[in-house]
Length: 451
Image 1 (cartoon, rainbow, N blue to C red):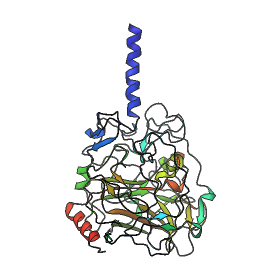
Image 2 (spheres, helix red, strand yellow; image 1 turned 180 degrees about the vertical axis):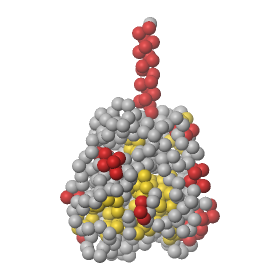
Image 3 (cartoon, rainbow, N blue to C red; image 1 turned 30 degrees about the vertical axis):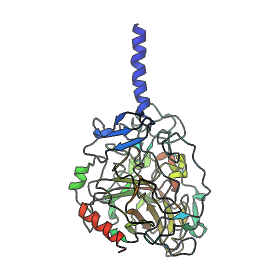
Image 4 (cartoon, rainbow, N blue to C red; image 1 turned 180 degrees about the horizontal axis):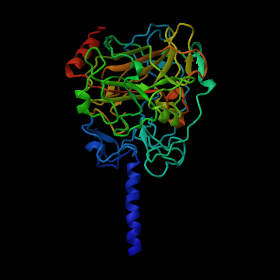
């Protein structure tokens, strides 16, 4: 009997650990998430309701313990739009979502997630089995590393990169296409001017959306503009009480992984950790950051609730596959063409541009979801229509411009150690902290076709 009791005592924690690693919560249950949040699920295990936002750091979670959020990547494989000319020779409207003419992208193997197009966030980051001890959740994906772990202080193996074949002349990029807009389209544009984070005044390797309470949860440096509080330990309350770099009072937080000149020197106090994570060189400040909220090509938009979390791109697309790689690489003056999987080499006088379009079809209930994606999805790539039951909200577009040499291997994106600085991993994050008055002003401008 003593032996049976011992075996049962070991078996139960093992079951609990296995359940915590699953993206789908057991059907018919109300599953608690870090910070006291509860997810209600149907018998099939699909999330039906998620009370979003965060009022306090996750209970009992210490920096480096691996976090508690499993962040998946959801989407339809769509490529968002670009400013400038469309691939059909039509002038692109900034309120529309682009679709590239290049569509031959392999579909990832179905992981059994609720959405067949969703990449399983619990797959090991390096194709192996998740390591023993605590795992590190960061930027929407669990770290695996072939038997090593992040949370216990053991570093994932750094993959060399980038490669020379990941750089290409922008004139060889596929053309960008976009849906035709209907007569009912909301074509206005609302802009927040929030600076460029000059001098790295606000940067850290955290990701409060998908790894709350975990320092160095992203394992790469993020630039921040807007809200001046943002870190791994931010809450709705601290964000609402913080100052902002935006000139219109927008307290939202906007962030993205930094770019580096590979031959430069990192003189920051985080240089040692960055080097351990495989991110070396001098960080480049964007020459310009444009933050625009656009309309929908089929109709009017409704307000984004305060404290809504929205993410775009896949920080682990190099290993997960390109299904959720929505970010685009282009050059100023060539915005009718873009890559997702190559760094652009721009002609003299042209800047490298990263265009990060965010999903804009809201489920009408939640400010976040268990995988940080189900509550906010992209419109149809051909029509611009939101799925049935979804509400169109203002679409955030971040356009980041850089002065960089047109030379292969000269620059690269900060990435997770095992992602090898692959350009396909580009991504961005947004927490809406606009007050209701400012959000209504944005909605009125977009629906009123004003700029």
